[in-house]
Image 1 (tube, one colour):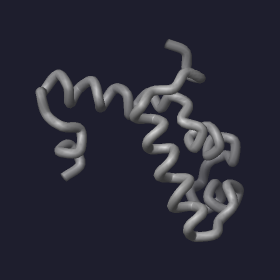
Image 2: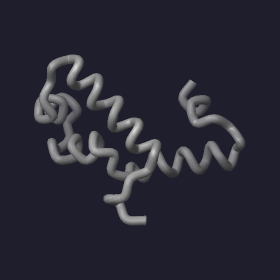
Image 3: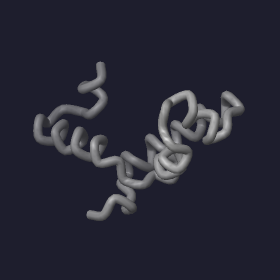
Length: 73
């Protein structure tokens, strides 16, 4: 799969990031500066473009027959 494709998990995470950013009345540029990343990267995340690391973690959790959230507990 190409990196521009979306996964459900990437979309969910992107939506949450956008929600929290907007709740704090921040622009993508402000968030990018605080996070030390490019503004365009924040945009890609919020659009739900594939986050390969997240997708890999989801696959590992599935392989372990463990809900993904338990890897972060």
